Amino acid sequence: MTMLRGGLIQMALKASTEESPQAITKAMIEAHLPLIHEAGKQGVQVLCFQEVFTQPYFCPSQDTKWYDAAEPIPDGPTTKLMQELAAKYQMVIVVPIYESTGVTGVYYNTAAVIDADGTYLGKYRKTHIPQVAGFWEKFFFKPGSSAWPVFNTRYCKLGVYICYDRHFPEGWRALALNGAEYIVNPSATVAGLSEHLWKLEQPASAVANGCWIGAINRVGTEAPWNIGEFYGQSYFVSPKGEIEKIASRDQDELIVHDMDMGLVKEIRNRWQFFRDRRPELYGILTDSE
Image 1 (cartoon, helix red, strand yellow):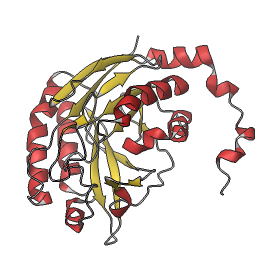
Image 2 (cartoon, one colour):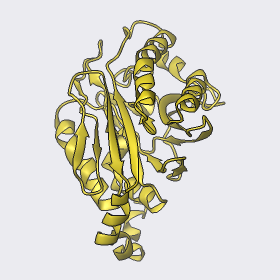
Image 3 (tube, helix red, strand yellow):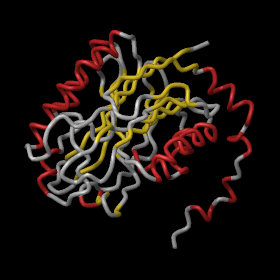
Image 4 (cartoon, rainbow, N blue to C red):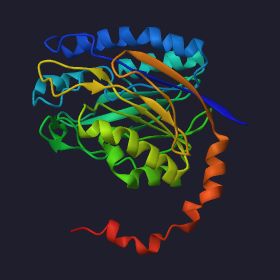
């Protein structure tokens, strides 16, 4: 039995949105550090934070102030700090932050992936970008086209899918076909229909693709927008579709879980979904309108 110890951190905002993005980043990192150290002490092998973890979920606004929250990857201070912590604890860390590029006005919703020796392995940029009331993400993020990277970390083959992406089954399948055994989905999602879907979509995707999924959500409310309650409940779901460990609804929390990676092979061999696919018949899925 090959076990993988995963860790997920969910957290409420730790500074007023009236403060500068830089001050908010400082407060959020300071709040995360004790939980990161605790994850290291508990022997977590793969750790992930929530979507844009250093900031509020600022997309209910259309305020250019938040462009100043973006930083480069891998040369920005947050990625560099996480490289140091990854090496210290021999822990893979997935770092979801707002990414600036070399072009002013071009920003991405991104997750950097750092291996257990501190090596920067690459990044995934959120592919599907919503543009509906309360979620004006196209104002802030350019859609990514990362070609479904799977990162060969020290401990597992790791994929990343970000928040709204989870509603699109094609990306889960593409990551699994590229070899992902464990996929993390850092999110920022509020109560309502989303909460009902929260415990349906990732288990269904885990079963359909024979992989483990770590789903992460933030907690609390964020003024002045108050679009609803971020309901936490970060969890690990197995390739059987069973939620094996889940966090609270409203507390900052590190949850740690040992995942039996042997289930990936067992479930894929049992169901043979990859064998029985008929991609030659699926052209309609990619035909342009």
